[in-house]
Image (cartoon, rainbow, N blue to C red; front, top):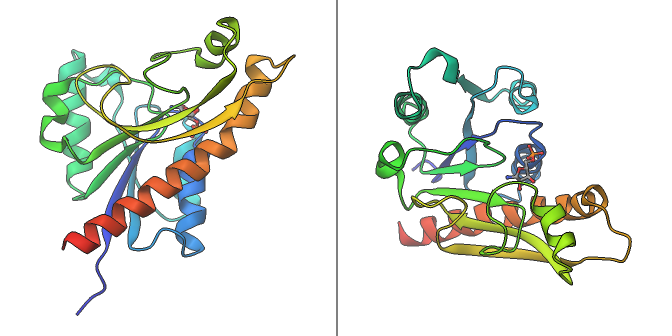
Amino acid sequence: MDAPILRVAVLASGRGSNLQALIDAQREGRLGAAHIVVVGSDRRKAGALQIAHAADIATVVVDPRDYADRASFDLALFARIGEHQPDLIVLAGFMRILDPAAFAPWLGRLINIHPSLLPKYPGLHTHRRAINAGDAEHGATVHHVTAELDDGPPIAQARLPILAGDTPETLAARLLPLEHALLVRCVRDWQAAAIAAD
Ligand code: GRF
């Protein structure tokens, strides 16, 4: 019998450091049965696509400019991703608000990493907002995606103290490796639970 595999799709709009962390973990045997089968993006120039190419992972680009509206773009994106039959879709820096109707078939199999301690600071500029609010700590959340922006049941969080003199840039730089470890842990735990339930 073939070894079980958890098929993972990653959607990313930007540089793709979280994707790289997942690829590194997979290569080093730290992702268990999780296997990244496709990387999708809304931006042809996303660094994440270069990272996927370098790792010989299939890519899908769906350009919003080719669609009349958000809903039709989202439906096309999930249809293309669905062709790769993922068991889990990870939003890792995917910078578009998605239409709940488009991802309804994927509910329960769709997660996002967000750079704040949700429910604090959904949306953008999370590091600046945490500093400006005088928060003592900041962090990142991996959560299930639901119809609400950056909301949905949290799966796990990583925390770090905000230091005197922190800027949004220094805070983001210190948080990033914690995000990577958090996302790797969540995908590894997800595959462990999926395999155990099988
Ligand atoms: C990360 O901070 C992630 O939490 C947020 O977008 C950023 C993506 O970074 N959702 P990268 O493209 O994975 O480097």
